[in-house]
Image (cartoon, rainbow, N blue to C red):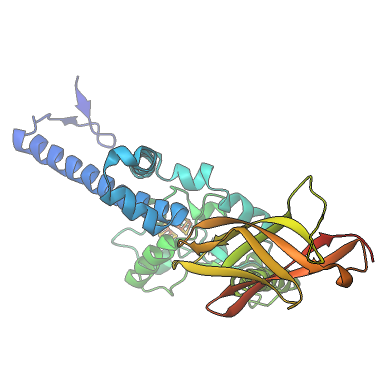
Length: 340
Ligand code: SF4
Ligand code: SF4
């Protein structure tokens, strides 16, 4: 087939590329995809460590594959997903899959600072020929197209704010380089609000910004509270179902309980249970003993209260969890007994 130049319509002579060109291309492409797989593998491991914890991930890596089929397959499933994102899906993740852009669209108004093209200054755009001076065109945009070329999501910011913009600022940097070369002020593309461009308004802290800041402060506060108040142990104590009380021959009344203690730390814990009232006794059927790190134990025990101390059908008993002679948690539970 005969090829012609789009502009001059001159015939283009077709030259067969040397074999070394194809070899180089194959080497470059293969190396690129190997690097993609390595990065994807690293990210997949980090992601899995975030979900299952670094200790479990190290176990999957160190121990035989046959003992961790699920973990091993998960690493490769995540690696494949990240590799496909890198090599195939690419900017579609930002423009179609990621909800961040959609969310941003409903949050902004004419006062919001976004990456924007100053069309008041830039238009009418026009190319500069070598013989022209910069004053030969009215607007500052020389229509070089570099802001579109560098945009990772392939949009033209000169058409206005778009959902696809991920605020990477690559267009700002490249346009500033162009402005420098043609001796025009920087920031033809920059962080502007609609009103800054049209009304020459200065950036202000609007009511909407105050509202969003307040919401963020509340969220940060709630998150901080949960992090600070997070306890090392989770303790659940329940009276055994289907049983009322037992009257003991030594003047005590007993209730049977089951407990589960979860150790959320990275250290084993040796725990015992006591009641805060010295008159109340605890008699174990199954001791909690030592809980492995990130493990849990179950315990069964009787709580015994002198019958003379029971004055209501339901008495609240405080069971204390003791580690190294320190009370680390107190759990209240109901005790049923006969009224004296
Ligand atoms: S990089 Fe700047 S000068 Fe070039 S087309 Fe984009 S806005 Fe115009
Ligand atoms: S900030 Fe980034 S994503 Fe947005 S238009 Fe500029 S180059 Fe494109």
